[in-house]
Length: 162
Length: 102
Picture 1 (cartoon, rainbow over the protein chains, first blue to last red):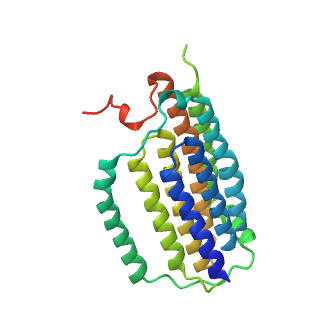
Picture 2: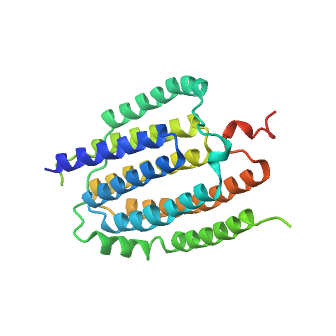
Picture 3: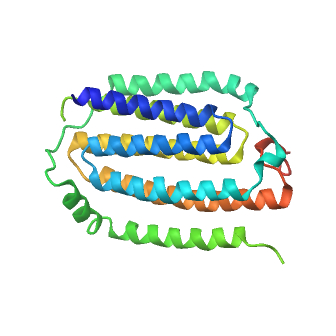
């Protein structure tokens, strides 16, 4: 049963990622991206990371995708070009490098030894919150500062000059 | 849920990362490049959460949270830059931005 769920979610995810790569229209690309994010949230849920699945849905599938859709509707892409295509030469040169990286990763995954499990977590959200607000409190606050700086930077970048 | 080994999640994460890198290198549209970058970040998240589930720890999910926060930051700044590029240069393709080419 777990394998069925995992296989369906993984195939859904990878097909959506392929759609992001090969769809021509920007709106179709965003829709495939949204589909990939939903598959990923389901994958997190099947792994027992409920909080992360919710955050994935709220932040990624709602906020970030709305960002992208806003930019796509703001910028009149259709007036410029109908199809932008892909770089064939770069793809051709990049493919052997990608395959070599794949080989290295696959070797590591097949031959490497994983650390032994520490034990089963019963309440993932409680454990997560406890660790986040004790050991990782300072990185958490730094992340909020980074978000603030990014907000100011985005406002400055998007401002009309003059 | 112990029946699915960690390798399965790592393989999915690896393939997704490769697809994202191919998208970054090969696509022309700036927005699609940014979205492929988000795919690679998500691939890392899958590996982190899978390892977390395997080890029975909580740190992987915390790192995934930070990755999501960084992805939101990157989306905001990246889309701001794309809008600025479009407004200043009227281009939307990565090969038309060549002021800094040597």
